[in-house]
Length: 413
Ligand SMILES: [Zn+2]
Image (spheres, rainbow, N blue to C red):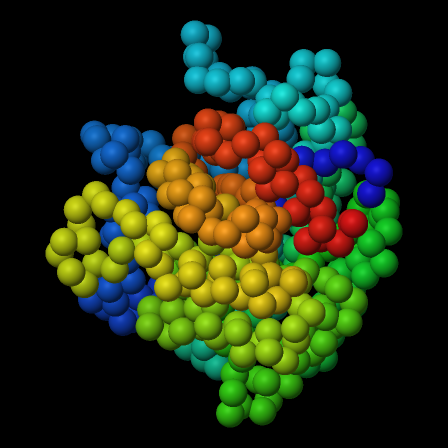
């Protein structure tokens, strides 16, 4: 990879066809108490001080749905235009405009990058037959990931064709939910889509995928001890990824889409569950997304108060510990980086570390946005960039998050 890339190591572009809404309804069978206990009502998750006022929350839902409603290539172009400042209203003074008008490159914190690399994270919303036993059109619901992957490849090709000077290059991750597929399907999915040679592929080639995305809350136990058939399937994934040095991103906060009851989804998502995987696969390259942020559980009425304690979480601390033990453990700032106070807390946390530990942790953090899911919390793709720009991280630290660390994670260096 010769280009000097600025990376968004974690973002999503999908349409309303892709999430499995039947499946999400299924998760609600635990009733209202399950929803309350899930923390989705936690003030720091979606309700910000800004959008709590008046109609702000309604607008942010409309904004988010807008990004889900159009074809994917249009969304790529919308994000591209946004980074160039095309959506800013006149008189806006909220920071730098990053895209350069000459169409050559991208400026951030005074450094020029050739392109912005998007590590699109595809989620596998496929479901198995059993869960669809009461659904009439069940066949149509199976193995959705193939369609989503092929649509992504063609949207990327279309974006490049329509906008040869576009800001973006694409490094998608293929979603795999091992729990719902056969061993044969998992093997063929990996072989069909993942670019194991890390070569340049021509636009439109489906072997465009650079990594694998897993999403435990949809029902994938990363280490299904005691279930030999499930275990053999996760082993296919980890054997493939460790041997070929293919990175995995795993969702790691206590919110988001969910296909199983809340308590089970927490068990599967916890970095402690992954510690068992790492013991067996110590060279795995693994990104714990969202820095393991745990939103205040709403079982206690006090948690409705607008407080957040970003560093108190057990998941956060487990990720830090695993980074020190395993060379391939990374984290990303997606979604969690919508909260400026998270960055301040993280800086304070890093100051308390020994110089060697601080250095090690700083080399494992990647910038990621969680667009378009993050539109529930920020107004635009550009605003998420502004929040990092406005943080007190040094230019060298930021350069690590947006360039050096993701390059190493994906395997370009
Ligand atoms: Zn995400």
